[in-house]
Length: 170
Image (cartoon, rainbow, N blue to C red; front, side):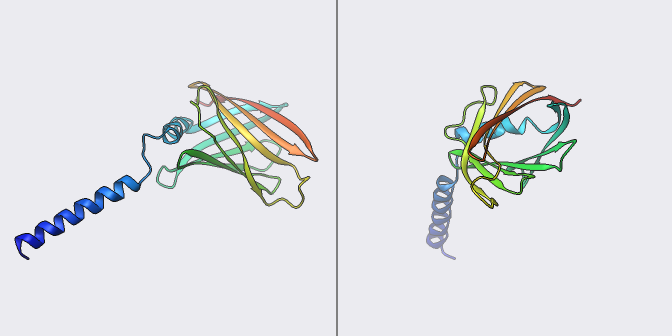
């Protein structure tokens, strides 16, 4: 290979890498920063909701790009919520015991200590529009060992709210 060809190849590779890097989502984006805060939830949490003990476990999966929350009420089957970054917002997909899957997104995400709110974008798995389904959730890290979740839902045209106060299990 001649010096000119080698130089051209090096310039091409560097230019291609620069274009590729610019097309990738920036880690400094607000949603990526909030997702990093959400990662601090990894571990086990406990709450009591209307007299029912609830265990919640957060784990990272998919090479750290997804935060999975498994919620296990003592009187019900477990549920899963998956949190991930999608460009300039976060997505939370909840796999509910009601058999549906609300997908909720953030607008401009706030800090976890002020509350990160996800609002319903769409829902799959419903048989009728009257079926019970979650319409949003706000996660607030009160301090490193206490978290509040405020879930909103819709059932037969009526709006409701469930609030959970979790403590980190040590």
